[in-house]
Length: 444
Image (cartoon, rainbow, N blue to C red; front, side, top):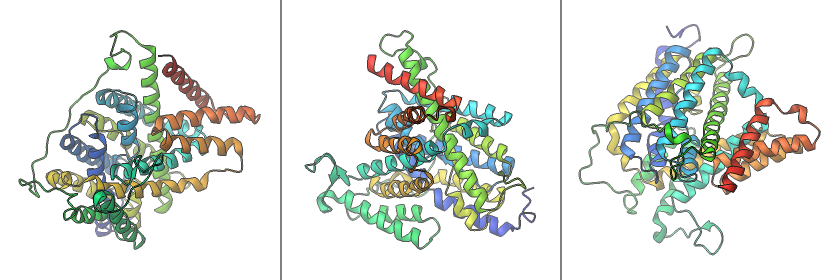
């Protein structure tokens, strides 16, 4: 079924690879609920359950439909956009945000089946794709720094580092955790990020940062996830007047396309990297079973939205499993089983403090920064839009604004550089949508 011998692997190697992938990405079980429940009104335990189940289902589809050693889960960056840009930044309800995720996933299923999703991805400027990854990395980093109390606006400057003393114990614990994570990663310890979170959580106990409740239990009954909590009326109805609002609809379009294209970039980049690493390409150099892999991503996103979590996407941490020898969907099947087992360890993940997950956020920011080397800064029509995309995301505290200003500046730079013919139709359409959103925001 999995063509194990054909791909030069063994059952034991695939099992080890699946466990390695889970260890490398299991931190998302703690991070995703923490991010989505941060001021949105969502319940941590329900999001935890949704995270585990949607990750397992999407990864199972990847195993049996695409037969690739790739695991999926709610993506970092996409969940940050969900919480900090859509809900807290734009003032939308989390139900409306889930509606955007659902519709994005449905569209992805259609595009994946007919095989035009790759063509859409290719039409977006390559420099913007890479800049989005870098910008999200910086955005995630500053969220991690803020969540741990490492940076503050009370330092006499616009933003600065606090003193690492016992008055700032959470910040001190987070820095210790970051150092541990870095050392483990450099030593190539499997599951370095997850182990870093676990050790930091334990270190936080004597510092008073980690709080273990009296009724704590290692094995616990999982909470039920959210089911079909969507708000289709909220797409175009002004919550104040109750009437149709072009501004509200325009805002939803921006949210929808941001989820859409960010997910596209994450998924394609991950699949290309893993295919290259594991030599999982056909004779023409294309990803093996690419359509099935993209369909797995889309099914995972729809499932996640129905259960109450943000966009599900392919995880680059799957490369750790490939490095351990994974070459088939059997390793993905093993990873999915472990996600289901994690459902019964709710209390263990619930005690993990922000100071323990912050190092993971900061370190994932580093991993996402690697794309900057692929941007041609010697060409101002490519480098300037990329820089604006990267710069706006952390400083505006908004992924959507970074993408919007990046696309708009790309069109302006290409026109100014007499290279307008290089701008695709899709990019022009996106630029018009983003400009319309800025106008709506200004006049409302």
